[in-house]
Image (cartoon, rainbow, N blue to C red; front, side):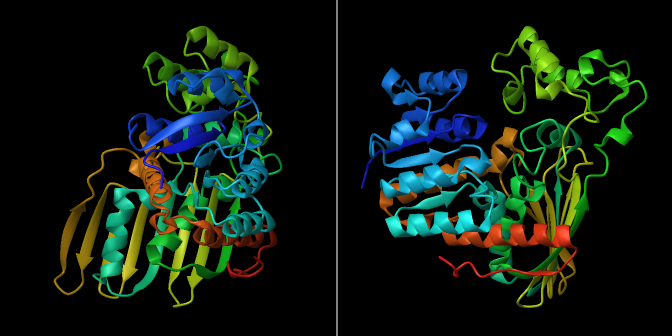
Length: 423
Protein backbone atom coordinates (compact mmCIF):
# COMPACT_ATOMS: atom_id res chain seq x y z
CA UNK A 1 0.00 0.00 0.00
CA UNK A 2 1.24 3.56 -0.68
CA UNK A 3 3.03 5.37 2.12
CA UNK A 4 2.05 8.70 0.56
CA UNK A 5 -1.27 8.64 -1.26
CA UNK A 6 -1.12 10.52 -4.56
CA UNK A 7 -4.18 12.46 -5.68
CA UNK A 8 -5.46 13.80 -8.98
CA UNK A 9 -8.03 16.61 -8.75
CA UNK A 10 -10.84 16.88 -11.28
CA UNK A 11 -12.53 20.24 -10.81
CA UNK A 12 -10.66 23.08 -9.09
CA UNK A 13 -13.67 25.02 -7.87
CA UNK A 14 -14.21 25.80 -4.20
CA UNK A 15 -14.84 22.20 -3.13
CA UNK A 16 -12.00 20.73 -5.16
CA UNK A 17 -9.62 23.37 -3.86
CA UNK A 18 -10.63 22.76 -0.23
CA UNK A 19 -10.27 18.99 -0.49
CA UNK A 20 -6.91 19.28 -2.24
CA UNK A 21 -5.65 21.82 0.28
CA UNK A 22 -6.04 19.22 3.05
CA UNK A 23 -3.00 17.45 1.61
CA UNK A 24 -0.77 20.54 1.88
CA UNK A 25 -0.72 20.24 5.66
CA UNK A 26 -0.06 16.50 5.56
CA UNK A 27 2.79 15.95 3.06
CA UNK A 28 3.71 12.60 4.62
CA UNK A 29 0.21 11.26 4.00
CA UNK A 30 -1.01 12.70 0.70
CA UNK A 31 0.21 14.70 -2.28
CA UNK A 32 -1.63 16.26 -5.23
CA UNK A 33 0.11 15.32 -8.49
CA UNK A 34 -2.32 16.51 -11.18
CA UNK A 35 -5.33 18.74 -11.77
CA UNK A 36 -7.93 19.01 -14.53
CA UNK A 37 -9.93 22.25 -14.65
CA UNK A 38 -11.27 24.18 -17.68
CA UNK A 39 -10.97 27.64 -16.06
CA UNK A 40 -7.42 28.92 -16.42
CA UNK A 41 -7.35 31.03 -13.25
CA UNK A 42 -8.61 28.20 -11.06
CA UNK A 43 -6.37 25.62 -12.69
CA UNK A 44 -3.25 27.77 -12.40
CA UNK A 45 -4.01 28.69 -8.81
CA UNK A 46 -4.33 25.10 -7.65
CA UNK A 47 -1.27 24.07 -9.66
CA UNK A 48 0.77 26.82 -8.01
CA UNK A 49 -0.44 25.87 -4.51
CA UNK A 50 0.71 22.29 -5.03
CA UNK A 51 3.85 23.11 -7.06
CA UNK A 52 2.66 21.16 -10.08
CA UNK A 53 4.53 21.25 -13.35
CA UNK A 54 2.87 22.54 -16.51
CA UNK A 55 2.16 19.05 -17.81
CA UNK A 56 0.33 18.11 -14.63
CA UNK A 57 -2.30 20.83 -15.04
CA UNK A 58 -4.75 20.24 -17.89
CA UNK A 59 -8.06 21.70 -19.00
CA UNK A 60 -10.08 18.49 -19.35
CA UNK A 61 -10.35 15.39 -17.16
CA UNK A 62 -10.28 13.23 -20.29
CA UNK A 63 -6.67 14.27 -20.84
CA UNK A 64 -5.77 12.87 -17.42
CA UNK A 65 -7.77 9.70 -18.00
CA UNK A 66 -5.98 9.13 -21.31
CA UNK A 67 -2.68 8.90 -19.40
CA UNK A 68 -3.79 5.84 -17.48
CA UNK A 69 -3.45 5.60 -13.73
CA UNK A 70 -1.02 8.35 -12.71
CA UNK A 71 -2.25 8.63 -9.09
CA UNK A 72 -3.64 6.38 -6.39
CA UNK A 73 -6.90 8.29 -6.13
CA UNK A 74 -8.93 11.02 -7.79
CA UNK A 75 -11.06 13.76 -6.26
CA UNK A 76 -14.02 14.33 -8.59
CA UNK A 77 -15.41 17.79 -7.87
CA UNK A 78 -17.06 18.74 -11.15
CA UNK A 79 -20.54 20.22 -11.43
CA UNK A 80 -23.22 17.93 -10.01
CA UNK A 81 -24.60 16.96 -13.43
CA UNK A 82 -21.13 15.99 -14.68
CA UNK A 83 -20.22 13.26 -12.17
CA UNK A 84 -21.11 10.08 -14.01
CA UNK A 85 -18.66 10.09 -16.93
CA UNK A 86 -15.48 10.76 -14.93
CA UNK A 87 -16.46 8.24 -12.26
CA UNK A 88 -16.94 5.51 -14.86
CA UNK A 89 -13.66 6.38 -16.58
CA UNK A 90 -11.46 6.64 -13.48
CA UNK A 91 -13.01 3.59 -11.80
CA UNK A 92 -12.20 1.53 -14.88
CA UNK A 93 -8.59 2.71 -14.59
CA UNK A 94 -8.39 1.52 -10.99
CA UNK A 95 -8.50 4.89 -9.25
CA UNK A 96 -9.98 5.12 -5.78
CA UNK A 97 -12.53 7.94 -5.87
CA UNK A 98 -13.64 10.73 -3.59
CA UNK A 99 -16.80 12.06 -5.23
CA UNK A 100 -18.41 15.34 -4.24
CA UNK A 101 -22.03 15.13 -3.23
CA UNK A 102 -24.52 14.54 -4.68
CA UNK A 103 -23.14 11.39 -6.27
CA UNK A 104 -25.48 11.89 -9.26
CA UNK A 105 -28.86 13.45 -10.02
CA UNK A 106 -30.93 10.44 -11.09
CA UNK A 107 -31.49 6.97 -9.69
CA UNK A 108 -30.13 5.37 -12.84
CA UNK A 109 -26.86 7.35 -12.69
CA UNK A 110 -26.46 6.69 -8.97
CA UNK A 111 -26.88 2.95 -9.52
CA UNK A 112 -24.45 3.00 -12.46
CA UNK A 113 -21.83 4.66 -10.25
CA UNK A 114 -22.28 2.02 -7.54
CA UNK A 115 -22.09 -0.79 -10.07
CA UNK A 116 -18.95 0.69 -11.66
CA UNK A 117 -16.92 1.08 -8.47
CA UNK A 118 -17.99 -2.32 -7.16
CA UNK A 119 -17.07 -4.01 -10.44
CA UNK A 120 -13.69 -2.26 -10.45
CA UNK A 121 -13.03 -3.08 -6.80
CA UNK A 122 -12.12 0.53 -5.94
CA UNK A 123 -12.95 2.59 -2.88
CA UNK A 124 -15.66 5.26 -3.30
CA UNK A 125 -16.24 7.95 -0.72
CA UNK A 126 -19.08 10.40 -1.35
CA UNK A 127 -18.61 13.89 0.09
CA UNK A 128 -21.22 13.69 2.85
CA UNK A 129 -19.01 15.70 5.17
CA UNK A 130 -21.57 15.86 7.99
CA UNK A 131 -20.93 12.17 8.73
CA UNK A 132 -17.33 13.01 9.66
CA UNK A 133 -17.70 15.80 12.24
CA UNK A 134 -16.84 15.44 15.94
CA UNK A 135 -20.40 16.61 16.64
CA UNK A 136 -21.92 13.79 14.60
CA UNK A 137 -19.63 11.25 16.23
CA UNK A 138 -20.70 12.40 19.71
CA UNK A 139 -24.41 12.46 18.86
CA UNK A 140 -24.32 9.02 17.27
CA UNK A 141 -22.49 7.59 20.29
CA UNK A 142 -25.28 8.81 22.57
CA UNK A 143 -27.98 7.29 20.37
CA UNK A 144 -26.11 4.00 19.91
CA UNK A 145 -25.53 3.72 23.68
CA UNK A 146 -29.26 3.56 24.36
CA UNK A 147 -29.11 6.44 26.86
CA UNK A 148 -32.36 7.91 25.56
CA UNK A 149 -33.94 4.50 24.91
CA UNK A 150 -35.56 3.69 21.59
CA UNK A 151 -35.81 6.63 19.20
CA UNK A 152 -39.45 7.47 18.54
CA UNK A 153 -39.24 10.73 16.59
CA UNK A 154 -36.79 13.35 15.34
CA UNK A 155 -36.99 17.02 14.40
CA UNK A 156 -34.15 18.32 12.24
CA UNK A 157 -33.77 21.89 10.96
CA UNK A 158 -31.44 23.23 8.30
CA UNK A 159 -31.38 27.03 8.63
CA UNK A 160 -29.90 27.83 5.24
CA UNK A 161 -29.55 31.53 5.98
CA UNK A 162 -31.08 34.38 4.01
CA UNK A 163 -27.85 35.49 2.31
CA UNK A 164 -26.73 31.90 1.53
CA UNK A 165 -30.03 31.27 -0.21
CA UNK A 166 -29.62 34.47 -2.21
CA UNK A 167 -26.02 33.63 -3.12
CA UNK A 168 -26.29 29.97 -4.11
CA UNK A 169 -29.94 29.28 -4.86
CA UNK A 170 -31.30 32.55 -6.26
CA UNK A 171 -28.33 34.11 -8.07
CA UNK A 172 -25.93 31.18 -8.14
CA UNK A 173 -25.25 27.86 -9.82
CA UNK A 174 -28.00 25.93 -8.04
CA UNK A 175 -30.89 28.31 -8.72
CA UNK A 176 -32.67 26.18 -11.36
CA UNK A 177 -33.73 22.55 -11.33
CA UNK A 178 -33.29 22.14 -15.10
CA UNK A 179 -29.71 23.49 -15.07
CA UNK A 180 -28.61 21.96 -11.75
CA UNK A 181 -30.95 19.93 -9.56
CA UNK A 182 -33.52 20.33 -6.82
CA UNK A 183 -32.75 22.27 -3.67
CA UNK A 184 -33.20 19.07 -1.70
CA UNK A 185 -30.58 17.25 -3.74
CA UNK A 186 -28.12 20.14 -4.06
CA UNK A 187 -28.18 21.29 -0.45
CA UNK A 188 -30.14 18.99 1.79
CA UNK A 189 -29.01 15.58 0.59
CA UNK A 190 -26.47 16.18 3.39
CA UNK A 191 -29.28 16.23 5.93
CA UNK A 192 -31.30 13.25 4.75
CA UNK A 193 -28.05 11.29 4.56
CA UNK A 194 -27.08 12.46 8.05
CA UNK A 195 -30.41 11.40 9.56
CA UNK A 196 -30.03 7.95 8.04
CA UNK A 197 -26.49 7.71 9.40
CA UNK A 198 -27.13 8.78 13.00
CA UNK A 199 -30.29 6.67 13.28
CA UNK A 200 -28.57 3.67 11.72
CA UNK A 201 -31.29 2.90 9.21
CA UNK A 202 -32.96 4.44 6.14
CA UNK A 203 -36.61 5.50 6.06
CA UNK A 204 -39.15 3.39 4.20
CA UNK A 205 -41.81 6.02 3.38
CA UNK A 206 -41.61 9.73 2.73
CA UNK A 207 -43.75 12.76 1.91
CA UNK A 208 -42.77 16.35 1.28
CA UNK A 209 -44.12 19.86 0.83
CA UNK A 210 -42.34 23.02 -0.31
CA UNK A 211 -42.30 25.81 -2.86
CA UNK A 212 -40.63 29.01 -4.00
CA UNK A 213 -42.51 31.64 -2.01
CA UNK A 214 -40.47 34.82 -1.71
CA UNK A 215 -37.78 35.22 -4.37
CA UNK A 216 -40.28 35.95 -7.12
CA UNK A 217 -40.95 38.92 -9.40
CA UNK A 218 -44.23 39.83 -7.69
CA UNK A 219 -42.35 40.48 -4.43
CA UNK A 220 -39.98 42.98 -6.01
CA UNK A 221 -39.98 46.28 -4.05
CA UNK A 222 -41.18 49.39 -5.89
CA UNK A 223 -38.24 51.19 -7.47
CA UNK A 224 -35.92 48.18 -7.44
CA UNK A 225 -33.49 47.90 -10.36
CA UNK A 226 -32.33 44.76 -12.11
CA UNK A 227 -28.90 45.08 -10.48
CA UNK A 228 -28.00 46.09 -6.93
CA UNK A 229 -25.38 48.59 -8.15
CA UNK A 230 -28.13 50.60 -9.88
CA UNK A 231 -30.84 50.18 -7.26
CA UNK A 232 -32.43 53.15 -5.50
CA UNK A 233 -33.75 50.94 -2.68
CA UNK A 234 -30.60 48.81 -2.25
CA UNK A 235 -29.85 50.25 1.19
CA UNK A 236 -33.16 48.96 2.55
CA UNK A 237 -32.88 45.46 1.05
CA UNK A 238 -31.49 42.64 3.22
CA UNK A 239 -30.42 40.81 0.05
CA UNK A 240 -28.14 43.58 -1.27
CA UNK A 241 -25.23 42.04 -3.17
CA UNK A 242 -23.34 45.32 -3.00
CA UNK A 243 -23.38 45.32 0.78
CA UNK A 244 -22.92 41.60 1.37
CA UNK A 245 -19.98 40.99 -0.93
CA UNK A 246 -18.56 44.48 -0.36
CA UNK A 247 -18.43 43.96 3.39
CA UNK A 248 -16.69 40.62 2.91
CA UNK A 249 -14.08 42.15 0.64
CA UNK A 250 -13.47 45.09 3.00
CA UNK A 251 -13.17 42.71 5.93
CA UNK A 252 -10.64 40.49 4.21
CA UNK A 253 -13.00 37.49 4.18
CA UNK A 254 -11.76 36.13 0.87
CA UNK A 255 -12.98 32.55 1.19
CA UNK A 256 -16.37 31.19 0.26
CA UNK A 257 -18.73 32.71 -0.87
CA UNK A 258 -16.71 35.71 -2.12
CA UNK A 259 -14.29 33.35 -3.86
CA UNK A 260 -17.17 32.16 -6.03
CA UNK A 261 -17.93 35.69 -7.19
CA UNK A 262 -14.41 36.95 -8.04
CA UNK A 263 -11.04 35.46 -8.89
CA UNK A 264 -9.17 38.62 -7.79
CA UNK A 265 -10.04 40.17 -4.46
CA UNK A 266 -10.05 43.83 -5.49
CA UNK A 267 -12.80 46.49 -5.47
CA UNK A 268 -12.53 46.77 -9.25
CA UNK A 269 -12.94 43.03 -9.80
CA UNK A 270 -15.94 42.95 -7.47
CA UNK A 271 -17.61 45.90 -9.18
CA UNK A 272 -17.14 44.24 -12.57
CA UNK A 273 -18.59 40.98 -11.26
CA UNK A 274 -21.62 42.70 -9.77
CA UNK A 275 -22.10 44.79 -12.91
CA UNK A 276 -21.80 41.96 -15.41
CA UNK A 277 -22.11 38.62 -13.62
CA UNK A 278 -25.00 36.71 -12.04
CA UNK A 279 -24.19 37.64 -8.44
CA UNK A 280 -25.05 41.31 -8.87
CA UNK A 281 -28.64 40.67 -9.92
CA UNK A 282 -31.70 41.65 -7.92
CA UNK A 283 -33.01 38.57 -6.13
CA UNK A 284 -36.48 39.42 -7.46
CA UNK A 285 -35.27 39.57 -11.08
CA UNK A 286 -33.46 36.25 -11.45
CA UNK A 287 -34.43 33.10 -13.34
CA UNK A 288 -34.48 30.91 -10.21
CA UNK A 289 -37.10 28.24 -9.56
CA UNK A 290 -35.81 26.06 -6.69
CA UNK A 291 -37.77 26.10 -3.44
CA UNK A 292 -36.93 28.48 -0.62
CA UNK A 293 -38.58 26.32 2.04
CA UNK A 294 -39.40 22.63 2.28
CA UNK A 295 -40.53 20.01 4.78
CA UNK A 296 -39.86 16.28 4.49
CA UNK A 297 -41.68 13.72 6.67
CA UNK A 298 -40.17 10.24 7.00
CA UNK A 299 -41.30 6.94 8.50
CA UNK A 300 -38.90 4.14 9.45
CA UNK A 301 -39.47 0.41 9.59
CA UNK A 302 -39.53 0.56 13.41
CA UNK A 303 -42.44 3.03 13.32
CA UNK A 304 -40.19 5.95 14.28
CA UNK A 305 -40.77 9.21 12.42
CA UNK A 306 -38.62 12.17 11.48
CA UNK A 307 -39.30 15.59 10.07
CA UNK A 308 -36.77 17.68 8.21
CA UNK A 309 -37.27 21.40 7.62
CA UNK A 310 -35.19 23.46 5.23
CA UNK A 311 -35.79 27.19 5.16
CA UNK A 312 -34.00 30.17 3.65
CA UNK A 313 -35.45 32.63 6.11
CA UNK A 314 -33.03 32.42 9.01
CA UNK A 315 -29.82 33.96 10.16
CA UNK A 316 -26.76 31.95 9.19
CA UNK A 317 -26.70 29.24 11.83
CA UNK A 318 -25.79 25.61 12.41
CA UNK A 319 -28.28 22.82 11.97
CA UNK A 320 -30.48 22.03 14.96
CA UNK A 321 -31.78 18.61 15.96
CA UNK A 322 -34.05 17.16 18.63
CA UNK A 323 -34.23 13.38 19.10
CA UNK A 324 -37.04 12.02 21.26
CA UNK A 325 -36.51 8.63 22.88
CA UNK A 326 -38.41 6.41 25.31
CA UNK A 327 -35.99 7.24 28.15
CA UNK A 328 -34.79 10.72 27.29
CA UNK A 329 -34.42 13.58 24.86
CA UNK A 330 -31.33 14.79 22.99
CA UNK A 331 -30.92 18.30 21.64
CA UNK A 332 -28.06 19.40 19.41
CA UNK A 333 -26.99 22.58 17.64
CA UNK A 334 -23.87 21.47 15.78
CA UNK A 335 -21.50 22.42 18.61
CA UNK A 336 -22.92 20.90 21.78
CA UNK A 337 -25.47 18.35 22.96
CA UNK A 338 -27.99 18.54 25.79
CA UNK A 339 -29.09 15.17 27.12
CA UNK A 340 -32.22 15.06 29.31
CA UNK A 341 -32.86 11.84 31.28
CA UNK A 342 -36.48 10.96 32.12
CA UNK A 343 -35.49 8.82 35.13
CA UNK A 344 -33.26 11.31 36.91
CA UNK A 345 -35.01 14.36 35.42
CA UNK A 346 -31.58 15.83 35.03
CA UNK A 347 -29.84 17.39 32.05
CA UNK A 348 -26.24 16.82 30.97
CA UNK A 349 -24.37 19.18 28.64
CA UNK A 350 -22.02 17.38 26.27
CA UNK A 351 -19.30 19.58 24.78
CA UNK A 352 -18.26 18.31 21.37
CA UNK A 353 -14.94 20.11 21.11
CA UNK A 354 -15.31 22.10 17.90
CA UNK A 355 -15.47 25.85 17.45
CA UNK A 356 -15.83 25.90 13.67
CA UNK A 357 -19.20 26.48 12.04
CA UNK A 358 -21.00 23.82 10.07
CA UNK A 359 -21.05 25.78 6.80
CA UNK A 360 -18.54 25.63 3.95
CA UNK A 361 -16.62 28.66 5.20
CA UNK A 362 -16.09 26.92 8.54
CA UNK A 363 -15.04 23.59 7.04
CA UNK A 364 -18.41 22.06 7.95
CA UNK A 365 -17.47 21.75 11.62
CA UNK A 366 -14.43 19.60 10.89
CA UNK A 367 -16.29 17.47 8.36
CA UNK A 368 -14.18 18.56 5.38
CA UNK A 369 -10.98 17.46 7.08
CA UNK A 370 -12.64 14.34 8.49
CA UNK A 371 -13.81 13.25 5.05
CA UNK A 372 -10.34 13.56 3.52
CA UNK A 373 -8.64 11.97 6.52
CA UNK A 374 -10.89 8.91 6.33
CA UNK A 375 -10.57 8.61 2.56
CA UNK A 376 -6.78 8.82 2.55
CA UNK A 377 -6.54 6.33 5.43
CA UNK A 378 -8.82 3.95 3.54
CA UNK A 379 -6.73 4.20 0.36
CA UNK A 380 -3.44 3.80 2.27
CA UNK A 381 -4.75 0.72 4.11
CA UNK A 382 -6.77 -0.70 1.23
CA UNK A 383 -9.73 -0.79 3.61
CA UNK A 384 -13.07 0.61 2.37
CA UNK A 385 -14.50 0.04 5.84
CA UNK A 386 -12.70 3.18 7.00
CA UNK A 387 -15.04 5.26 4.81
CA UNK A 388 -18.38 6.18 6.39
CA UNK A 389 -19.98 7.39 3.15
CA UNK A 390 -19.45 4.46 0.81
CA UNK A 391 -21.42 3.62 -2.34
CA UNK A 392 -24.29 1.63 -0.81
CA UNK A 393 -24.86 4.04 2.08
CA UNK A 394 -24.86 7.01 -0.27
CA UNK A 395 -27.16 5.31 -2.75
CA UNK A 396 -29.66 4.72 0.04
CA UNK A 397 -29.81 8.37 1.06
CA UNK A 398 -30.00 9.53 -2.58
CA UNK A 399 -33.01 7.26 -3.09
CA UNK A 400 -34.65 9.02 -0.14
CA UNK A 401 -34.01 12.44 -1.68
CA UNK A 402 -35.41 11.36 -5.05
CA UNK A 403 -38.49 9.85 -3.40
CA UNK A 404 -39.08 13.03 -1.40
CA UNK A 405 -38.95 15.12 -4.57
CA UNK A 406 -41.44 12.80 -6.27
CA UNK A 407 -43.70 13.19 -3.25
CA UNK A 408 -43.43 16.99 -3.39
CA UNK A 409 -44.17 17.23 -7.09
CA UNK A 410 -46.99 14.65 -7.15
CA UNK A 411 -48.40 15.28 -3.65
CA UNK A 412 -48.02 11.64 -2.74
CA UNK A 413 -46.55 9.41 -0.07
CA UNK A 414 -43.65 7.53 -1.67
CA UNK A 415 -42.14 4.18 -0.76
CA UNK A 416 -38.35 4.19 -0.98
CA UNK A 417 -36.64 1.60 -3.17
CA UNK A 418 -34.01 -0.80 -1.87
CA UNK A 419 -30.36 0.14 -2.53
CA UNK A 420 -29.47 -3.46 -3.39
CA UNK A 421 -31.87 -3.76 -6.30
CA UNK A 422 -30.98 -3.05 -9.90
CA UNK A 423 -27.19 -3.03 -9.53
